[in-house]
Every structure is written in C-alpha cells, then in structure tokens.
Image 1 (spheres, rainbow over the protein chains, first blue to last red):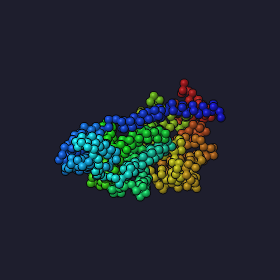
Image 2: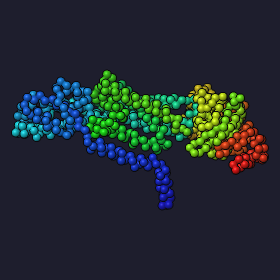
Image 3: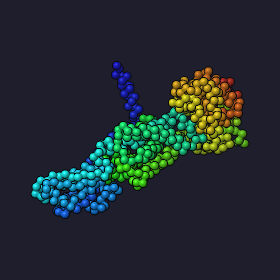
Image 4: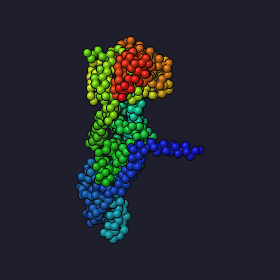
Length: 366
Length: 238
C-alpha cells in the first residue's frame, strides 16, 4: 500500500471533475433542486381540494357543520345540489362531496351521525383531508348542538376504486407506464450517444441518409423493443401482481406505446446535449426525477401548491400518468374527453421531440 | 472544365472560431487518380476531407465534387468515406456492418465483393468487438467502398496498422483506381506518398505544393520526399 499511489488516483479523479463543470454543477445543484422541490411539494401552501356540500338536513346541525367546513383550511367548499354533485365528481371539478341527509339532526339525537362522504377515489392521497376536515367539524359541533356525545360514523362511498383497492392498485396503473418510459429513455440516450462517440454518426452524416430518416429509424427500432417490454410489464402487472383494471387492456397498451415513443425521442433529443455516457446519465435526476415528483403519481396534482400545478400542467408525464389512471382505475374508454386530452398531449409531445431531435442533429456534429 | 476533375477546391477557407484550419486552399483531383494529401498532424487534412464530403461548409471559396457544388446530398451516394478511427458498430458482425452501410446507400448487392476485396469474407460472421485492429480497419474500408463510390475519401487509412497490411491496403487502392475510382488518401507517412499519382502538401491550413512525387522532389530540391517536404515547409513557413 503506497499512500503516494493512492493519492495519485484521488488527484486524477478530482482533476477530471474540475474540468467537467456540468458534472460539478449537477453534483451540487441537483440535490438542492430535488430536495427543494420535495419540501415545497409537502410543506408549501398546499392548495385545498374542492369539496361540494349537499345540505338536505331539515334540522340545524347540517347548516352548522357546513358553515364550520367552510372555514376549514384543509378543504375548499362550495354548495351543490344533489343532482349536480355526481356529475361534478365525474368531470373532476370536485374531489368529493359531503351530503347531510334530511334526518341528519334527528340522527344526532340518537347519538349517531352518519353524513355521506362521496369520494372520487382515483387518487388515494386526496381522501385524507376531506375526512379529517369533516371529523374535526363534526366532533365539536355535534356535541354543542345536541348537548351530548355523538358517535361519528360517516358513510363513505367511492366513485372509483374504493375499499377493494390497495396501494398497489392505485400506484400500479401509473407505474406500469412509468417503468417503460424510464427504461426506454435511458437505453435510447446511451445508444444514440454511442453512435456519436464511436464515429459512426459522422459516417451516417456523410451518407445519403437524411436527418429525419436517422431519427425515425431509431424511433422505430426502440419502439419495437419498448412494445415488447410494455407487453411483458402489462402481463406481469395484471396476471401476477393482479393490479385491478377496469379498462381495456388494448388501451393501456396504446398509452404505453405513446409513452415509449415519447421516451425514445426525448432520449435522442437530449443525447445532443451530452458529450459522454456519464453526462447522459446525469439527465436522470434533472429530467426524470422532477417529472416523477410533479406528475401526480405520489402527490395528487390538485393538492400541489398552485405554482407547482402550473409546472405539472405542462409536463407530459402528468398527462401520461393521468391517462393510465383514467383507463385502469376509472375504466375510461376512447370516448372519454379526459383520456382523449391525455393521449393527445403525449402524442403531441412525441411529435415535437421528433422534430427537435432532427433539427439538433446536424449542429452538434461539427 | 471543372467536370474533368473529381474534386475541385477553389480558394477555400474554413475557421473554427479564431483558429484558421484552412486558409485559401486551391486543389484539384483528377478523375481516376490516387491523390495523396500529405501533412503533419493538425495541418488541416481532416477538415479538407470533411469539406469534400459536405460534413462542413466552407466560409469562403468553392468546393465542387463530381460536378456539384458542395454540400449537396445527391452527390453523397457517389462518395465513400473512411473516417480516421474505424467507425463501426462493435456489437454486430462484420457482414452486418457492411450490409448496413450498403443498405443506406442502396447497394445491398455489393457486400460479398467488398468483403472479398478486404479478405474478410471468411470472417464475416465475427462480431466486430472481437476483431484485431487491422481487421477492423479492413472492415471499415469495406463499409466505405461497398456501394462502389466514384470518389473514395480515406482519412489516414493506414495509421496504426502493420507494414504487411499497409502494403495490402495500397494494393486494394491501386485495384480500385484501375477500376476507375478516384481516391483521396490522407497520410502523414512520407513513404506512402510515392504510391500516389499526385500529391498535395499541406501545413498550417495552406497548400505548400502540388504535383507528382517527382515534381515535389524537384520543387524541394531533394531526392528524398521527406527532405523535400521539410525544405518546402521551411521556405513557405518563414
């Protein structure tokens, strides 16, 4: 063991980093960006989910609880009619509505209150603040109004999902798409970079091949691989893990294919900005992790701080994840406007990247 | 008149930022000849070849190749380009590499002939990553000539290969030239210069002299090409 020789290795390593400004920047900027984003997501002025209130109570309790809920910071409330409530839950403008039945005050005299809580249910994280807010308002008020302790037993109904759903059922839908997206992206960016570093790209550019032909050829090649992978992931998710699925398997596959094509083109496009495989891999914390955090997989977009919601709204992965959930949890078909929008955004993103990939190809050769 | 030349560079300049890689180069390659591009490392040989095949665009002057002003995609079909490093796909076989370059040039039928020329037909199934440096270089040459280009640009094709293989390469080149192909071969090895019909000597991005090996010797006042080159370089450089 020679300290001198060990030092030589250490020094050489640091010398390399000194010149690779980008790696240095990544090493020190990326943790702040990612942690900062996480902190903002979890502690930032999280916006309160929209909850509808249907008050049919003939007694005073319903109005009192509704008033208390109106002042809750956990949720934003609006009064809705019983007729509208279901439709608004379905179109996504409400994450839940609470209904106080006509005999609500009477129930409380008997010591039991059972408000109905109707939850949209396609995203698990959204339920908690609704139940918590209701519970808080109920417990203090019910005893004040009735003068005795009452048992709070809300009747919870789910539009989608529900008690038969476990965590994997909720996250599985999003992850099925995400795994394909992520792996295809990594493979594409590295192999396109190889094309550059082994000198074959220079040969291709001196051949009659057009830029668009190169990008399209790459896209098809990796898409074939990605589709086989998508089938495998899907079969494993549905047959082995038995993730609940209410939609068409072909639609899931279609959405996965769109995500794969987008990932291939993202890989080709970003490879233009990397000089080594090392730098290519650095795009993962910069491009993939923030998208992952903001796509609504773990933190529902509607509960993000307002500023981050705008960011989520322009990220393609948000639409991809939403589309996968629409299909698998809500059982949406091609007639659903929500799914149409999701698919269109992912497809448009893929097309935009094909164009961007072809346009940047020439510039980086010289 | 320019159509009698395969390559015609007219007062061409190319800079990369402040660095002048080529500075007013005028040079002509006749159809069917082997033209040697000689000069030390960093003289501008690779830049010149990239200008000829349209990978770079000249800032001043005119580059005409096979009668067309470059860059021009339609001419590329008739050009073969062997890059300095053996640019191949390491994970696939020799034949798969050559077939790929044949396919993008629309010349799938030439694969066997190209592999036989460089004596790799028997090794066609070998994965490129397992080949020796010399075999890779031969495979790279096969990829460059599989579509029977009218003009073959070879950027230091004999760098790093043993003397035996070098002799073989020059044998291939002569056979190609005899079949009517124009070859531009860059090198910094002077003993290769004698095998060319005409030479262009470049240094610091300028053409020092042009002519047959005998002409160059006469211009440099020496019987030895290397001495002639040094004499010419010295007189122009001062």
